[in-house]
Amino acid sequence: MDKSSDEKRDGISNGGASFIRGDRILVTGGAGFIGSHTVDRLLDRGYQVRILDVLQPRVHPRGKPPWVPPEAEFLQGDVANPVDLARALEDMDGVVHLAAHQDYLPEFSRFLHTNAESTALLFELILSDRGRYPVRKIVFASSQSVAGEGRYFCPREPGEGFELDLPSAIPGRPSVPCTANTRNVVYPGLRSITQLQRSQWEIRCPYCDGDMEPLLIDEATANPHTPYGISKYALELLALCLGRRYGIPTVCMRYTYVQGPRNSFYNPYSGIARRFALCILQNSPPIIYEDGRQLRDYVNVLDVARANVFVMERPEADFQVFNVGGGRAVTVMEFAHIMLRTFGSDLEPVIPGEFRLGDTRHTISDISKLRKLGWSPAIPVEQNVEEYIRWLQDQPIPADSLVAAERAMRSSGVILKVEKRCSPSAAI
Image 1: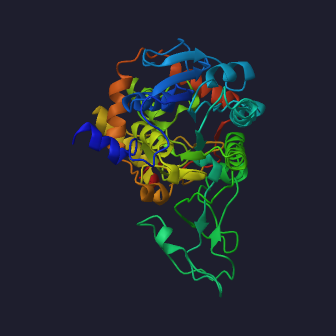
Image 2 (image 1 turned 30 degrees about the horizontal axis):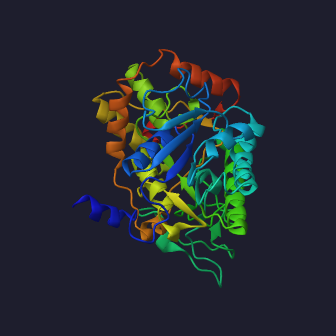
Image 3 (image 1 turned 120 degrees about the vertical axis):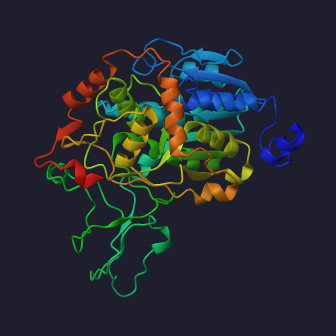
């Protein structure tokens, strides 16, 4: 396929796209994990790119990372600082706002300051001088944490007048009849510490006390229960409300568990691939929280970067929220075995009887809305793991990075022990 036909297929020069080659795009958080890959994608598509990144020491302790491309203009600064953001925003045609505070430390005000206030500040600056800040569209990084525990149903016979949303259920999950004369779909709150300390991991029906089945989480589900999730929901509300009011198209992207190269191995927030890989590299078994049966939706960072640019270029995406996931349910135990096989290790996962506050039980996104627009994930979880390990093995990893991160979460009360342990065999 020649270049011109590829451009038409991808929407850059098809007459209905929002942007053309040479347009100027600001990527906040552009030195980070998702941000740097989004920068690469934009450059590949012919845009001029400016990066604003604070280079937070817990994520970038060595300063600006080597993957920041010289073709992109780089500015160090804070998105919540009016002076820094104004300097970065000048003459930009579009913004991909990815900079965010995400951590397990109890810095509750910073979540709202960095994630929500910076969103409001973007609009303040743009509206203050449209000639200086000619932004035509903003793509925002949201999170599946907005959905909290998601949505569930009790698959027993429902009461009169209620319908089960069976087509949206996770394939392969068992179903049995319920006699509760209540609504079948439930949007559960945060699991209590008491429940978790008793190793009662599953979400229970509030009417019959039976285990419920997880539904795919759609974009209408919003029930955040962490400061991070609340800040991202505030971002969505601000983006959609102010965007519509002032005629600035916005799109909010709810990412699930993003994986791949450049995911910081310093920051304890950076996830399961980091934790498992660092354990195995040190010839230690991967440590699994809860019982390993948690369902997760892993998506590759290249697919996420492609989704960010995809919605930037399409007016049909304007003023909408989209889930961005991998399209496949994987248990934590299954993920651990995928990683062990990829390393060629004969270690076995360990379930020590611990849990992490704020974790959801099952999180699988319904990505049908973004699929209908024309985007689909292309990289399976196995390739996800291969790419991450290949990248990680070339990095200068501090010997105590895993221990230090775990110690920080334990000291802040994020990782807690259960009163009754689960046996590893029960979770396979």
